[in-house]
Every structure is written in structure tokens, then in C-alpha cells.
Image (cartoon, rainbow, N blue to C red; front, side, top):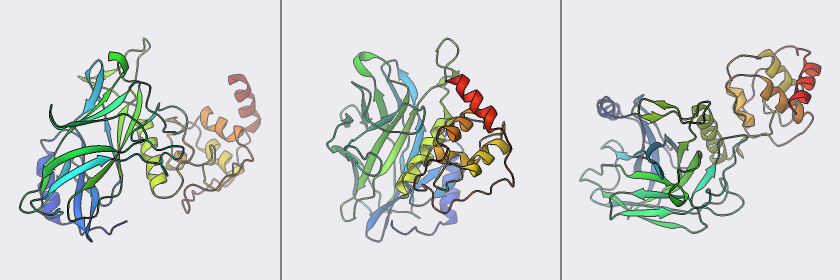
Length: 334
């Protein structure tokens, strides 16, 4: 991973001014460093910059019944974080394998947003389209071949660029895309620089639905499952950091096995909002409840290599003796 450049105050001032009128989104910030392209992340909501970012997440809007899309992330470089001047910035979509898609190469992936995070094939007949205009676009089919992109734009005399494209998830046979998360690998190129590491755009199309299975809207935009989005982002960050993704279900303290310490964490946090320790098993529950207890009981005594080395969590001093109750409740659910 390339080293980060210093973060200059003028960058934050300029970006903050832009953010006052910008819609909520996150931009990718490509910049030249050590003879190559590194990519940071800028969140206009918080005016915060993260160097060497690799995961960029956005919710999908419902543009038409047959496709959902979004115009972010964009590509935004400033004089403080420039690319080479007067040079085209282009991209392609590689078919990735390890660590995100270990079973086979894919140029786009899908997870339905339920259970443990597991990205695989796109739903049948779906594709992801990247469009700069009607005549400049490319279609990614989720197959095993790299997909050629196009020139995003040419940098200015100071190496700056600000370019947005639209991303569309197209359903099959004119139908709406399947609810879930669509993952698009991306690699940036500029002549004279080493290409960037593969970065990932995560598009959240897992919508909240009412009792009639109708999508819930907040004004004109659909409400997405932000809890599942957080977990998918955590999983991707862990995989790309070399942690192997989410760990053994129920191993909340990441000790490598499911045992008394994990049960203690669940029982002593019962009914509370999910803590940061809870992301390690890939569950989808907002509060600590029966689902977490089930994870512990179903995997009691099992072992696996820790997924987040060094991320120990302080455990309660003593266990609460609810194991028998948990087992009985679990038996009823089954």
C-alpha cells in the first residue's frame, strides 16, 4: 500500500464549501504518489478525508422500474492531492478473485443482504452499467473477464479532476433488480503512473419494506437497510486488510473459538444496541437478542482462525447463567 500524503487545511476548506450544496455522497480521491495512483475517500457530509481507501458505498435510487442507479461516487482530485496534469484518467473493471471472490473470477458480485456476508454471482439476467453519456458507457455482466472502461476525463493544468458518472443496476427482462448489494471492482489508470489498487464500489439496493412488501420511501428516495450496509462494509474492509473477512459465527470476542467469553458478551449486553464487537460474526441484528445467542449456541466449542488479529474486546467479569433458557428458546425457534 502506498504511503499517504499530508492532509492540508486548504483541502478541507475547499471541500467543505462544496459540501454545503452537495447531496450526501462519498467521492473517490485519486492522487499521484510514489509513481503510482493512490485513492482516498472524501465524505462531503463530514468534510472528512481518509487516505488509501478501498471501499466506497452508496445507496441505489429507483430511477425506473427496470433499473436502479446512483450518480456517486465521483472522482475528485484537488491541487493538494493532484494527479499528473493534462493527462487522461481512465478505468477498467477487473474480474477479481482473492480475496473478495475466492471461488471464481467475477467483474461484479452480489449479496442478498441476509445472513452472513457472502458475495457471489449476480442474479440471473442482471448487469451493472457505467455511463458517462449515451455514447460513452460500458456494461459489466458479472462474468469472468475483465471489462474495458473509458476515459473519465482529462486532468487540468494542476492535475485536478472532478467527474461523476452514473451507475445503473439493470434487472432481468424489464423487471426490477433483485434487492441486495451489488459490488463493482474498479481500477484507475493514468499514463505515466502505476495503476491503482483495485477499489470497490458497494451499491446498497436492499430496501426496507412494509407489511405489504412495498418499498418504504423517505420522501422520494427509498429507505435502505443501513445496518446490513455497515456489516458489508466491515466485511470488505476486513478482507482487503488481510483479515479473511468475518470470523466464526458467534465468536464475538474473536478469540478463535466460541466459548464462555462469547456467551458472557451476549448475556451481559442483552437488549442493548449492537456493540462494535458484534460485527465479527456477520449477523444482521440491530440489538443483542436471541439471534446472537443462537449464533453462540449453534457453534459452541467450534474453532477457527481469528479474523481480526489484535482486536480483543474486554469481557464481563462473570457469566450470567441463561444457557439453558437460550437452548430451550432456540429449540422452539427451530
